[in-house]
Amino acid sequence: MQNHAYRSRQLGLPLAVVFAAIVLTVGTLFGASGAANAQQTTASSNRIWQALKGDVFGDRAILVDSGVVRIEAPKRAQDAAIVPSTSISTRPGRPPASNPSP
Amino acid sequence: MIIDVNPAPVAATFEIGKDAGVTHLSTRVRVDDYSYLRAIAETQGGELHMAQTFVKASGGCSAPAVKNQDEAMATMGQMKLRQFPPQETMTKAQELQLMIRHPNNSGLQRNPLTQYFIPAHFVQKLSVSQADRLILSMEGGISISEDPNFRFDFTAHGTGQIQVEAIDTDGKVFRNQWPLEVTGL
Image (cartoon, rainbow over all chains, first blue to last red; front, side, top):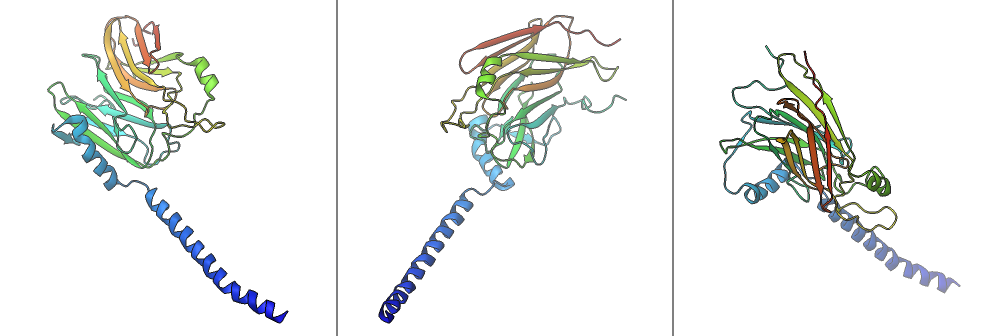
């Protein structure tokens, strides 16, 4: 009997090691997938845009924030499937539409 | 309009009719992840102008539809137009809100029961005109939300009818027209 208990205790050690190894592996896997699903940032969104720009507009110059066009959207969307967005264009020499007329 | 991180980043291309007087345009879009939303406008002179805003959202393209598909298919193509009188007495600009019933499936949504992807099916082309004068036309994609909704201002020329024509990816054509509600005075 004593011999049996001793043997199982001997077996217990490597089992614990294997279990720890499994926990470690699963942990790293989840960690890795977490990193892969990381949210986009302004920088990564800009990188996508730089790569995309040529496909859509060729090498045409794009004037940024010139006041001709504006876009509005909530900073954080309540429902990602229905994000209200508004673009406002104003023509040079005309007041923006949202301004009250003088 | 461009949404950088969406599977199809060019969300929609709008063309504004000559003398249509459209100065603003609102719609609803799907946003798949944190992303810049960009509005790029081409002037008559051919210049490109851009504005951008960063939106924190995720999963918009694959989010399940609000309505069940049978109901959405039964009412597909129904349209509603709301007309708003000019807000300022000094201007003639009226506001229109066009609502179209269409599931606008993105192709990235799954059937909740079978888990199969629901095929993409969306409004591809849309045009709004008054008495055959173009106010606004759109080439859309999967980034436009279910039941597309557009609100914009325009300057009426005469009292002709407002005509709307929408074509979806199945080649179905939906047409509707409404008399112009004469407002002001």
